[in-house]
Image 1 (cartoon, rainbow, N blue to C red):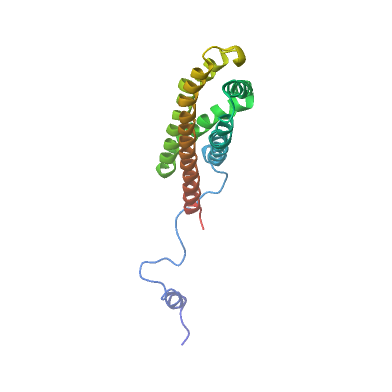
Image 2 (image 1 turned 30 degrees about the horizontal axis):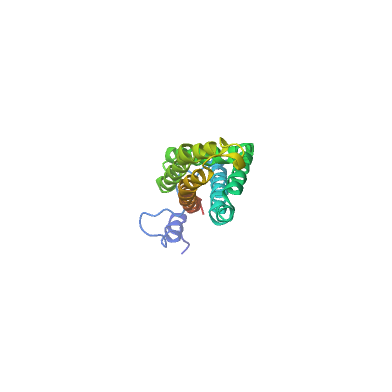
Length: 208
């Protein structure tokens, strides 16, 4: 006996579970470029990591090479060398750009992450921004005034009470620079954690 079309259709659908449709239903996810805020997140994060890494490397180099090397000089040689280092850095537009951009880029990354409600990414970015802000505040409040006092000596060979001035300078500038290195490294670590979390979040949200 030949099956009727309704009977054949019922048999073909018998292998589907009850109440299940043979084909997925619902609107398809629209294709197209991601929003502007999504496109800018990764470049902001990468730029933040690079700028903060450069600053951490600069401070670390002073800790392990520049300051120990200067400590081997006499007071006049120490003062003259440090004056030249400070003048070179203060006159470098590239240093000023990287020094300020590290905080600006990190803060911008945190704002974008909070607005996108990516708390797992935004929280380490906020930590990174706070750590680097401490570095900036200490630099402006402590290191720059000390550098200015050293520059005000003029020619170290004719400066009065040079030994006392240099000892006071070393006793503050050196440990404060260690503080700057530590908090720059903490900021860099938080930025790397945010970048890794962002990558994991994006991979989970990408349709398969």
